[in-house]
Length: 294
Image (cartoon, rainbow, N blue to C red; front, side, top):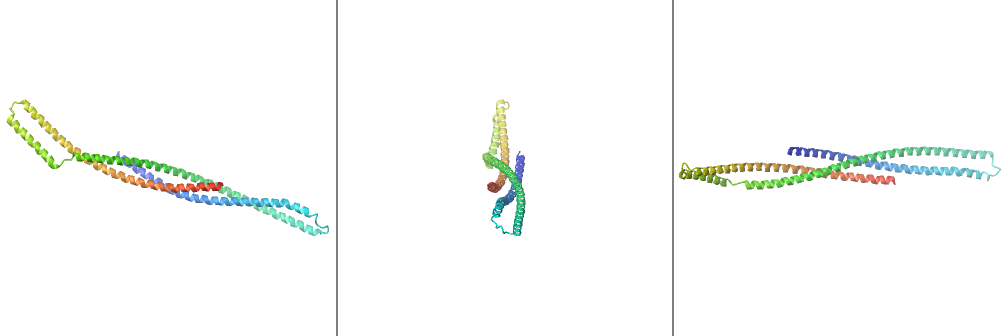
């Protein structure tokens, strides 16, 4: 069970490292994408201003074209009858040339407007692609945040387990201290038991008649009790060794879990820093969208 838990924690840490690296890479890509989006937005605003200016110029040209013939017609009656035919022909030629140049200008402006519209369409497509990419990055960032939350829950569980192991170590240490006895006391207990056994044997040899069954039974009971005490003492020593082994294992596990806990806190801190940078980039993207829509 302990090895399975250690393997699970190691896999979780590796996955967290991979996701942290991916999040850092995507945060950098998001920053570059945001810069491109800002640049495209500026170009889009410039094109929109040029389109508005060209439309205004076209409107002015159309107004001038509509007004100019009326001015030409109103000016013809005011001319003197003595004006020569050659002068009138020259004026008509000038008017035709002026009209042709205006038509060429209008055609050039129409062509430029179409090109600007195409450029604006391409910019809008590029803007949509960048927004979709930002959306995807935001979803991946949300997944990374969920992973960080899961890591925080796992860290809390590990902290509780470390606390539980520390309490268990304290309890085992207390129990081990209560089970320990000084060697001199053990020797004195053994000597007392040997002396008591010898005294009982001498008393038995001296006082017990050969056919006294009651005394024999009592002596057998005492010997069995003494053997039980010795067996209990040996069991106590075995339990003391087992408790000592458990204390050492608990200390090793506690040190391992504390190390894993520290590593995971470092990873969570890195994730928080990466999420902070990603939230700043998302805020810049929202501000850019508002300015473009305006």
